[in-house]
Amino acid sequence: MSAPAAGTHAGDDPDAEPPGPPRVTLAKGRARPLWAGHSNVYEGAIEGVEGVPVDGGDVDVLDHRGRFVGRGVWNGRSVVRVCVLRSTRGDLDAAFVLRRVRRAVELRRDVLRLPAVSDAWRVVHGDGDRLPGVVADRYGDWVVLQVTGRAMADRRGALAAALLVATGARGVWERAAPRFAERDGFHAGGGRLAGETPPETIDIAEHGVRFRIDVVRGQKTGHFLDQRDNRRAFGALCEGRRVLDAFCGSGGFGLAALAAGAASVVALDQSQRALARTTVNAEMNGVHAYIETREGDGFAALAALHEAGERFAAVSLDPPRFASSRREVPAALRGYSELNARALSLVERGGLLATSSCTGAVSEHDFLVMLRDAAVRARRRVQVLRVTGAAPDHPWLTAVPEGRYLKHVLVRVL
Image (cartoon, rainbow, N blue to C red; front, side):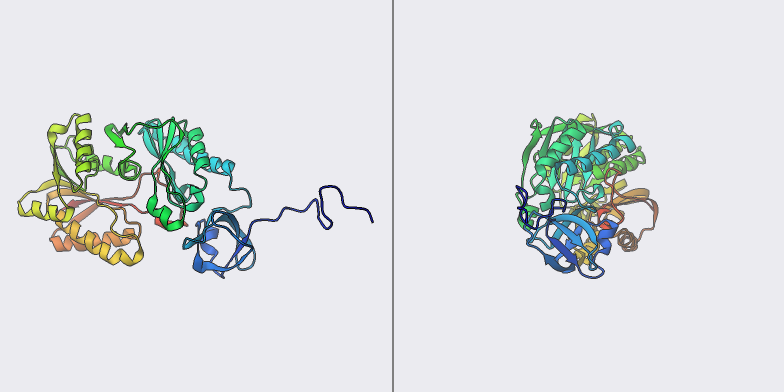
């Protein structure tokens, strides 16, 4: 018998494929969301595990019949045991990340043509761009990134490099995600990831309205880009009107109204920092003489305005998220109903209310039912003019309906 060839062992097949990663088998019926394109494999969906997966390591996911479903990343510390990143066998390496980021940028640049609308737009929107747990926003020459899942947190270097190449930005800055990092066991990150360090504030323009963005201390990545088109549509109807911008943030709805010829704006927020940003943005747009900022809690402040007899021809409500899970939805809907009833009582006859919810657990149907009930409580009748969501650079997959988190309803109050 001849000796084995050098560099091989007896019994090795030089043509055989190398062993794959550990395999996760799903219980019967639990592969259906993944076949459709969902990325999450929850602990309760797993029937068995073959091999020894390590946190942050690759695994192959199979259905109960042993058919390949996808390749993803294991995390034994999370209720989402596997984050599936691709539906074919292949490396989850820097080249894979670059391909996904390039496709996301092509959508914004070549299909939506957002650079012609604004120099601020969402580059990557999580599952909607098949990069779960990733949010990346472009502000002028810079990209601001936030990562909320282990799978992509372990690839943040490749992600930053891909964003730099695909967008041509000068630098990529990361906003830390400590709450998610503590929950799922990854480094919270933060700071410069690639290219140059951005200045603390960046000036952008949105449909002709200028904003100064705080990329270091501002909320989320610095600006709420999802409301871009809703701000413009609301503002276009506000010529000559007195406007209330409640939960104003950086003053987006009020500034859009003034840009379209509103008579005046009262900008209301409980955050002094938000009101300071609103003042700066008003000065940048040359409309500071027509805007008044007031500090106060949304619920109490709306009640105080009503008691004082103040009325407005247009009101915008853009509150923060009211619930983070389905079990909190009933309480969230009660809060929305109370808030919208108070807002409706402030609107003059024939006036406008633009009301929003960024609570993903609240469906559009439930939000519209809530608005109907709020109108009954306020003894007003409303005509629905528009029902929209986030701007199109925030795409969502039909397999991941929770990605359609923003509800925005524009009504005329009778």
